[in-house]
Length: 83
Image 1: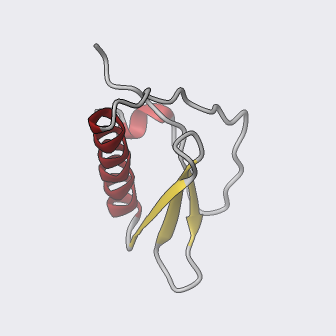
Image 2: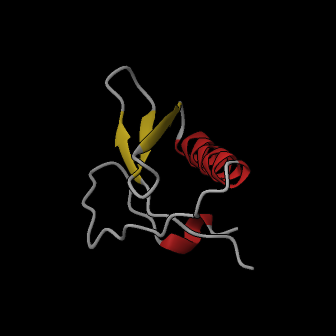
Image 3: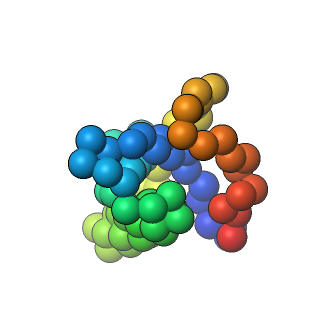
């Protein structure tokens, strides 16, 4: 089975760095100091959420697609961080 993919929302944090939210996973959030660290933290948060969900016999949530995202910080395509 292919790993599930989730839409993430990344925003600049007031104190510096970035905050990332995963709407489909009850809005879990994490943060990173750099863009790449933020992506890594998002992956770890998603993996942890799915692991705990599976341990408790829960269903893997489906993605909540976002139709468009506007940013002044950085533009990237889905495949920029495709593992």
